[in-house]
Amino acid sequence: MLKTVDTARLRDSVETQRISISELARTSGVSRAQLGRILSGSRVRVRQGTLDKLAQALKVDPTEFLVGGVLQRFRALLAKQHGTIDFRGVGFPRLQRCPLADVYVDVSVREEEARSSEIGCRGSQRGSCVEEKPTAKPIPAIQCVTTYDRVVILGNPGAGKTTLLKYLAALQGGQEIADDEVPVYVRLAELSRALEVDPCVDVIRFVAARAAG
Image 1: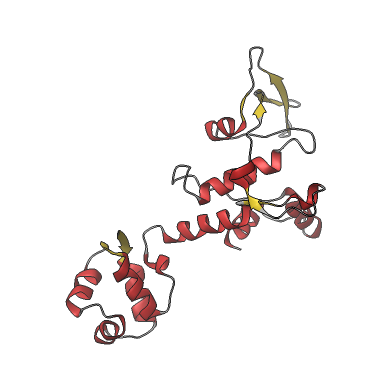
Image 2: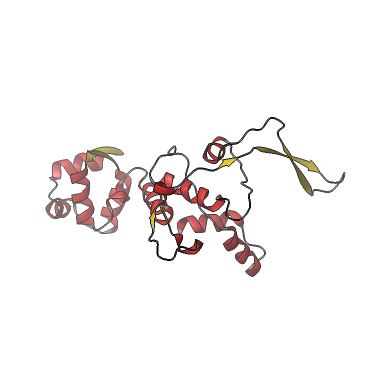
């Protein structure tokens, strides 16, 4: 299988470790001629075995050198964190963790449209009202979330809101959603606690920190 290598990352790793091309060729088993061809390009396709040899010689994860490798590692982390379900919290202490995809059943939602309206004539404060569409029919929750840019899922405790979000995160880990869509799972309770400590917490930076952590 061929992999697309970001040679700029590869060159940076070689320079950072101060390793010569001759030494890299000796420790990796990749010929100097092939190394020259790889390092002279910007994005080069190589065999998985060649990539693994270079990564092992440089003592890094092979995905470090892949185009989009950071996102691949992040997706794998999403799958690991959210790809299983634990029933102990819902009264089944003897049940073991199992793959979420094996037991997940998509819930249905009914679309409601939120419209913003100004409060007062001069103030900048804005409110909103929610109106259910007269002809709205229940649709699968996943279809709703993946169709619209901004969605708020409302429901009673235990309705499946959290499980839906974890399932979507796990799907991204399996790359079953378009590559340009990368969800970041953030619990509002954590953001609320952060705001209690520091009311000036920047929400965007908080979300970015959660993704990086």
